[in-house]
Image (cartoon, rainbow, N blue to C red; front, side):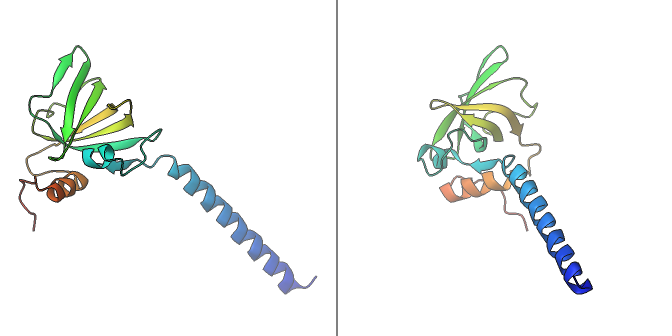
Length: 146
C-alpha cells in the first residue's frame, strides 16, 4: 500500500468518525429541544403536542388565578383563545394577572401541566415569541423597540 493511499484511508476514517460524533450530538440535543406555542396554535391543533415537552406563552388571563395550597390554576391567553394551566410549586414573585408568562411542561387532558413558570421580569421585557403571538392576534399593547 502506498503512502498516499494510507493517508487517504486515514482521512476518510477521520471524516467518518467526525460525522458519527456530530450525528450522535445532534440526536442527543434533539431530545432536549423545547418548542414554543401560543394557546391558539395548541387549541386549533396546528401542532402535535402529545408526549412532547413544550412551552406555552401569552398573558395570564384576568380573574383566572386560583391558588389551592402549593397548586395553582390559571389561564394563559393570546387574546384569541385561553388555555387552562395547572402548576404545583412556587410561582415567580412577578407572576400576576395580565402579565406576560411562559410556562414549560406537557399537555394533559385539555389542561397544560406546567413544570416551570417564567414571569416577565420588568415592564420592558416580553419574550419574543409571546410578543409575536400577541401582535399576530391584534392584542399587543407594548411599545415597539427601535
